[in-house]
Amino acid sequence: MGNFKFGVSLRSIGGREEWIAKCRQAEEIGYDVITAPDHLGAKMSPFAALAVAAAVTERVRVGPLVLNVPFYNPALLARDIANTVRLSGDRFDLGVGAGHMKREFDDAGLPFNRASERIAYTAAAVAEIQRRLDDEVVKQPPLLIAGNSDGVLELAAAHADIVGFAGLRQKRGEAPGTFQLDSPAAMDERVAFFKQHAGQRAADVEFNMLVQRVRITDDRRAAAAEWAAELNQPDLDIDDLLDAPQLLLGTVVEIVDQLESRRNRYGFSYITVFEAELAKFAPIVQALTGH
Image (cartoon, rainbow, N blue to C red):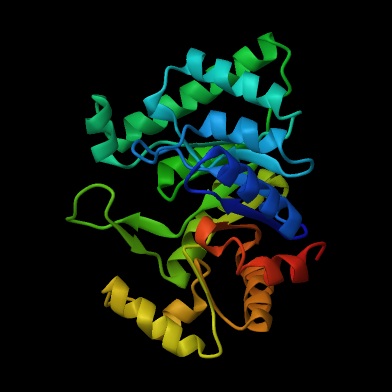
């Protein structure tokens, strides 16, 4: 279990100067990683944005969180990855996933295959990308595989340097891309599932949590009640939400304590927050950097 590492998922480019300013602000605050999503309609090409992010910073790593691999031809994807590794000065992390938003596949005119087929495609694509990077004598970037399903976690257990959890799962009976929050007990089970399949490898894998909400407040319970009303998920009570690793609610001191406790319980030492939390999360980053 390593020291804490912090990432921020920047969700939009805006203009050139806005993007540069956000990237530099993230580095100045002390974030270790700048990530970008890969969603059709997000008005962001992850490779272009991340190459610029690396060019205007000195220390932070950059990477997609995560590439929607079934969107891509592996040979063309390998070319973009190789160029971004070079342009970043080997500060690139390769984050991949198997895709989950059917409407994006529909919009792109691509088939939305069964989950097992998308995962198999992702596994084959990663192997092909790594082969091509070796052929081009490009340093293999750390591989982050993120997801919640058995298939994705089995893939991560076999190959990932970093395993990513978001604590969300598809809501039964709803359209693809409609999610519900996992309970703390469900998160225990998902982490245990990964560790079981990773075996001895698990000790060398970094555990990433994509935090869904941060609320700095003197009243944790009221914040949890507000989130419960938005969720409309009767299987989770307020105590579940207060204990959920996907949510950080409380004073700065309380949130620091929560992260330390959840590192002990789940192994989450690499914490990513969304762009909306970039500045507000700064005191937590500064309090835990190096710990």
